[in-house]
Image 1 (tube, helix red, strand yellow):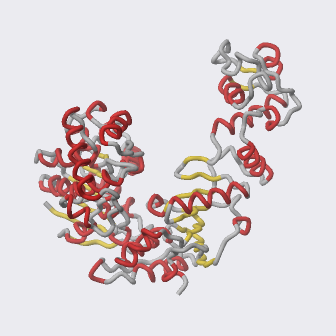
Image 2: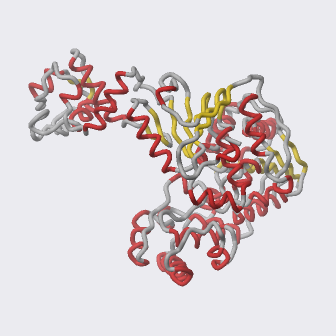
Length: 512
């Protein structure tokens, strides 16, 4: 077995490098099912498959059966099905039994292997399993959330959770990795690739080591400077301790000079014994780095440019959303648009039929969903029960045969009165700003953590943090420096760092 460690600073083409390894293996006649490519997210795994199929059209997507996440590998190899895993109803029942508030994790949490949501007790218990430490040790950890009823209740809930899974023969995401690793039998790979290694937890590292033993060539890629998921149990120390040939990618194709200088200044404040020192070059573009004591969104041209607005916490993102709606900016948050496709289609469709055009059944249903019964549309017609799935409808068709009461000369706001005033005002403001609502928003909102792997021409980064993050920063400044380093290096052209009037902000690095 040969092992190579690949360090990829921001924008240096780490994914491209790994996919080139895949291509080389295929060129050398290695079958796709002898290549293991394990990424941190399903999206990255699908990207790898798509590129491999484009390069080698003789193969189909299903040929790359081991291009997936480690959790997905465990799920498949253990022969699990949906009935084996905790679902929403199960978590609700568990909540009732244990008298706690807990729900099934959303997709973003699932990709980190998190098996809890909402409840601090389950969070602490699951982290103890992910990190392979005792419950007492995790309870005493300085970053552990406050548990009102202390360790006794924690142990009671932990026992209750395990008993519930045992009684129902269920597993959670943590169980999958632990149980699969115990089997000691894994596929044998000619080439094994592990991406985003700095984000792997202790139990995931155990599985990686098991996979490596039966693999000929092993490539482990990551960047310890971008290790921002310790809160979810990540163990970047295992990546740093890994033995093998070391390669550092040193040319960024994303980060301009002005941004790179500031970002490197922050990351280099981490002590040398806590990281691998890296010298990497920015792309051949000066770019812009600018600080702001406060920001008015109408001072930025957010309407026709590619923007990524980043905040340390969800709370600050909520405040940003309010301001964007006030100023009529079309945006998305975690890929969810600020205005639903249904409402957008309803507005466009009404405009079309009021101008004499015909629209589809779906468009009619979308319009009717925002119309008031007996004011905009007759009772019994709101869902178009007698309509044909393939037919097109004009205003006259709907008025004469399908209960439309709204007058043709009404604007969309008047014809679809079942829309809240705040939402209507927001849409009106966007239309006045000539926002293109037919394409994906140019402005995206995200927490810094969720933005990892993303990029944008322009980044607006808020230096606000939280009381909890501030406390953690004062205990260990390195982790928070990594978080803001990740946020800064999403920028391809301009980085604007904003200081707000909050109690906690990351001022030591940006304003000193």
